[in-house]
Amino acid sequence: KNKDKSRELVKIGIQKHLLGVSLKEVGLIYDQYFIDLNLSIREKSFVKNLTMVSIRNRGIIEHVINKYLKRPLPNKLQEIKAILIMGVAQILFTRVEDYAAVNTSVNFFNGRLNKWKGLANAILRRIIREESNLKKKYDPKLNVPKWIYNIWISQYGENETKSILDEIFLEPYVDLKIKEDYDYWKNQIGGEETINNTLRFKKIGDVKKIKGYSEGAWWVQNIAAQIPVMLLKEIKKNEEVLDLCSAPGGKTAQLLNEGANVTSLDISKSKTKQLYNNIKRIKLEKNLQIVTKDLMYWDSEKKFNKIILDAPCSATGTVRKNPDVLWNKTEEDIKRLSILQKDLLEKAISFLNKKGILIYCTCSLQYKEGEKVIKYIIKQNKVKLLDIKHEEVKLFPKKIINKGLIRTHPYRYNNQLNGMDGFFIARLIKI
Image (cartoon, rainbow, N blue to C red; front, side, top):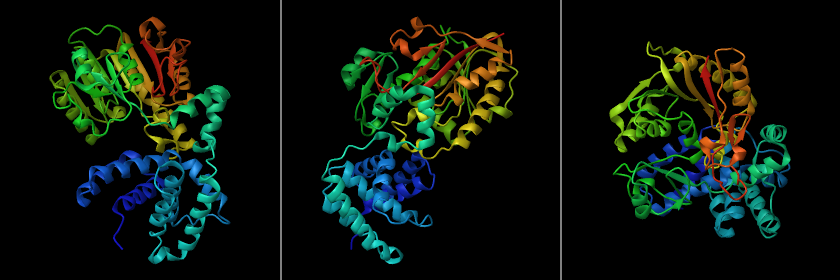
């Protein structure tokens, strides 16, 4: 039989995900396979879409599969689970014909997997009869590991948690931050007008094919991720600003576009290379200095009046575009990250001038990576909180501000605004 190249790739991607590989890394693996297998645009789109659908609905899919298993699948053969997830995803969440979803999945059970063929066939056909035909509505909380769900309930309560769940499993928007000549590029590339000279798209395909890409007219940046730079107050021309943990460079691009001289630091060589290429594309590299270094082992004689620290975090606020983060993180990861965040923040403060301003932010929905980090750092008596006022971000809903801190949620705010990543932001001033 001819191999189904597209589904073979999806199987590999889901299996990698089950083993803890990030969706971004899976995407890089796909890119190489796309070249090697010479897949068409339609086939590439199918691979990416089915992978996202499978991971975004992983909790529901596993719940359904487990209903029809008498005993758990063997952990050593994640391949079996990956094939079943891919098959059920097609049956419940795509327009693929049921017979095609079953046949293409069962065809994978050959050789060493042959003894599982009958079970897979029976499970998928029962799901078609008993699940798909009933058009069941599944509880979205099934798509969130219990430990994360319980934390969100304790932090936000049932109503806010439900609002988050209603939005985070939808297709993500893509926000393009326009560098200059907003009206001109709005006419050229369309999109929905949102705030802060940003155009929003529901489905975008390959961003490199959008008008203005080669001209460097815009960069991709969610509107919530634009807030930290807005809170640095007025940036003077050629003012020195330090952007820590800066890749892929959205905030660096904002700062450069406002006329700052930016020192941009990140630990990863590949990420700083990507950052440089991103900034070069939009023709803002002139006032950029890149440092590839672990912040904890970096030193600088120069002190700064303005610093941004976008600390490494669980990224649970970006689940709409990165659904894998819910599954690839543990409670231990959150504890470890919160310790790292405190260390990085203390180090960042050491580069501040007296009365210098530091913006601390994470794209996490966990208090342990936001409010609790700030509570800890304030007790060290090196900085104090510089309250954020709604007038500074007046185009955003008032609800994002609480006690001088910002927390954006990935849900709809009274029909005003939705599609924001979940961000925590605090502004500190050195005592």
